Length: 280
Ligand code: AMP
Image 1 (cartoon, rainbow, N blue to C red):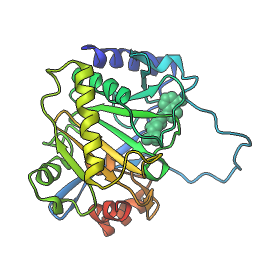
Image 2: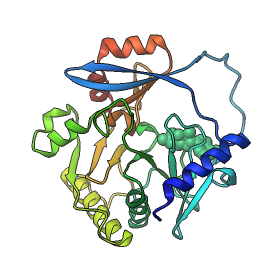
Image 3: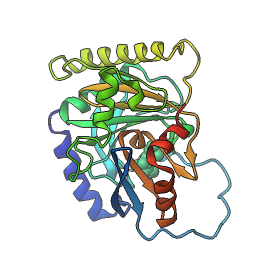
Image 4: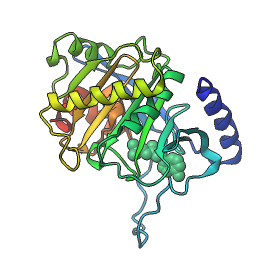
């Protein structure tokens, strides 16, 4: 599916026009911590709303049914591509399962085959927030894909690319929290099915490295980060620190704060310390 990005762009234009897409306005800046730059986005005009009481009853599932105005493309029998309704990043795609599967389950071979198609089409950053503790806001299984580079003002694909490369090169202390990373062979040559098998096998090996048995009924909370070059897993201990939520994007070097106060707190703490606090 070579035209996934073009389909996403066309659907973005249409969904902006019809109001289905509601981008979140942010201002961005860079914070430096121990010679590492982090991209920090701050919500524009965030104000604390008065508590209004939660609506009663179960939370509706936004992916079943999904809004057809956000549909981008089919992704085989089990998945489809959808625009993220509230994007901070342009062309932010969600890869959702057609029928409900829990976000807290192990990823499957079918998930990796579907995401492999996306990565073959788009030189992007795929990620997965494994459970609420890892930053997932929706319980229906969804992987995510954004084009690279994450920010035009950054000379690397991801702000933390060099650190992850250093870890790959045998210096795990470049990132001061538990993680397992593996380099990938060329993902563009094999068929999507073969690429999926390869990714699934690496996923298994990374869990083995972390000494976690995939025969257990569900994984611990974790973030998965995936590019055409590497796949990595970061186990999580907490969803947030100082009320700053962290998801997989945080481990790529992109953080989101809601206001100036949080930005100051993040600066005082240091982004690497934040990652350490929410990692293991
Ligand atoms: P996460 O918060 O990482 O679990 O990712 C779920 C994403 O789904 C969030 O980034 C939301 O912006 C997005 N989202 C929420 N509601 C909808 C919806 N109705 N359609 C499409 N995307 C949605």
